[in-house]
Length: 485
Image 1 (cartoon, rainbow, N blue to C red):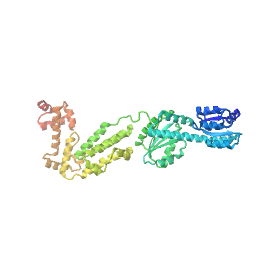
Image 2 (image 1 turned 120 degrees about the horizontal axis):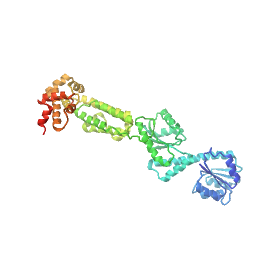
Image 3 (image 1 turned 45 degrees about the vertical axis):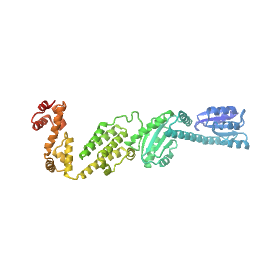
Image 4 (image 1 turned 180 degrees about the horizontal axis):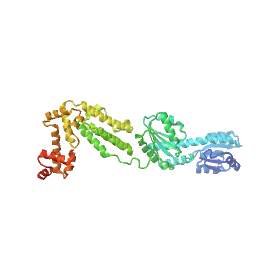
């Protein structure tokens, strides 16, 4: 904060320097003028926040100085004068003077007035910062606006700062601002009904973080929170706001916490291979009429990897939305039955946290399974689904025992019905599917027998060779030699 003392008597300057504690008032720069012209020049050049002005001075009197400067710069002004003239007092009031103190100066009176004016100055600078940063949040700022913020910071003695960003899960900005009103020394910038930017002006103190945690916990306010690193350069404000918003995304994994921005945040890769495999298996499962529980295990694994690596949550939302689209495309009636009509924006809005999104997906898989079980209207539909399942999963353990458990049917009943409907017993059909695939691989690839055996679900090469010989009446090698073109 800057002050200009304008009086033609040197003794007045010396007296004020002796009786006023400038530092306690937050005044860092003190300028002295001894005539009206010098006062005017310093007002133009230094733009002080507070002016102590004598009326009777050489070259220009105090009233004339005030009239000349009023359209250029208006500091908080105190008139000091030995003259108790009504004309002077009236002119001073009209020019916006805040107090008229007669000489000899009462130091207590002056000190109290300076305290009041210094608070006015701080309030004005804070309001200017709020206006500029609010504009930055909405429209961006040019260098001139940033310079104004830097000036205000300097006048308020703010040497460094950091940005804290809060995203409310249940928008109620009025309540939040009311709760935070006791945080007097912080600059609060609401943005809409759910976002609050806090300028922490004493960034090396943990007091603000403690206050936020205590107040939000006490008033049950849920939020995602992020915090930028410390900076002393106002040119970084926009960047720091973005950093704090990025860090706040970690609220997806742990809400009601202020997360510190770190370089390299969210750079770890999402497991796209596993995600795509889940979508593929869901697609196949819907067509077969059976969703394997392995899909649920894969979803849990995908989310566990995400929280372990702190992956950007947008990847998990994209994955979830892709699953919903798959359900809609393959079995649109399920979307209606499950009531899972979600746009991407609604998904982001309604499933805000890691737990909510994961639970939502797992519940959908459970509901699909329940619906598919209740939608089996006849034995024929069930047998067709089992047949398709065998054709798609011949490399898995598809023993009669496992298939009966998977499709919730007695294995003896399954064996009997399969033979009656398809005119071939179950295991003979499994062998046929595997042998057809074996023939395809032998004739169209260079895979070794042990590799083919593995792809077909046989435990070892000898088991595969015996089955092949029994089915085709020759060994795999001779079959390939005879039939390969």
